[in-house]
Length: 259
Ligand code: SF4
Image 1 (cartoon, rainbow, N blue to C red):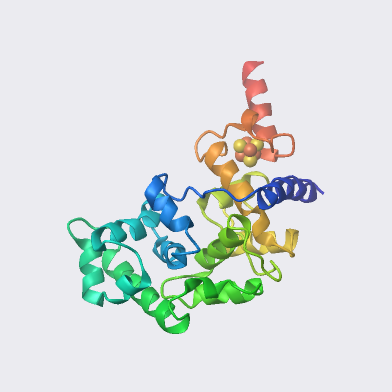
Image 2: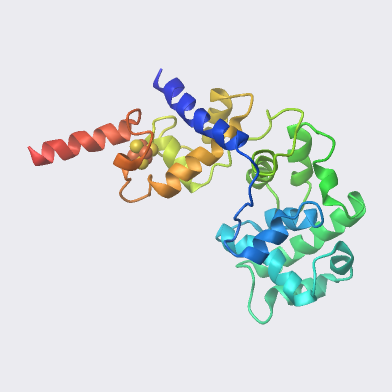
């Protein structure tokens, strides 16, 4: 019963975010880098390459990589990128300082993604999401890039649908991207066990809202980042506190201590 109330609260906020007018997405907090990543019209590959880089380092740092490379090569057109050899990319990503924690692996993934966009999508990465494809098709196309797993593939499709307002035929296959914030929130609000696996969280979200499991992604992530911190959740500020068993437990603990 409580699952439904929690789901409805998360979905209410998720739907507000989904319907909100399109705004500049702040991937990095740096104006020029974000402008490049938001420019789906002229540089759709920048967004795709940002997704490919978003692994095992802070997202803000990963999403900066397309812009930093554009600075080094004087632009970010596919023509310019296609002129780079695998060794050029490795050098650009590792000198004078590494742009990624796993720079050699990520340089290979970056190079391979450029080649894939050139060969499969005729240098137009927007073909990945044009013409109202199904969500499964878009997630599958992201999964075809080297180094992209289900979490990033769903994240890419979710950003396209929710933030860029790209129309899809359906949203069934956009899963929640169960990162550390989302797993913590699912555990604390009682949707899953505290130590639930990524798969458990993904399937729980599917069970709760099969039409669009990823609709709960950003609301949970925001709760995790803003209030439901790993040490010391700020329950009094959180809009889930009247439904959340952890908040109630913490409140009981506090009133016992002050009695
Ligand atoms: S009410 Fe507290 S424990 Fe529950 S989700 Fe919000 S911050 Fe986390």
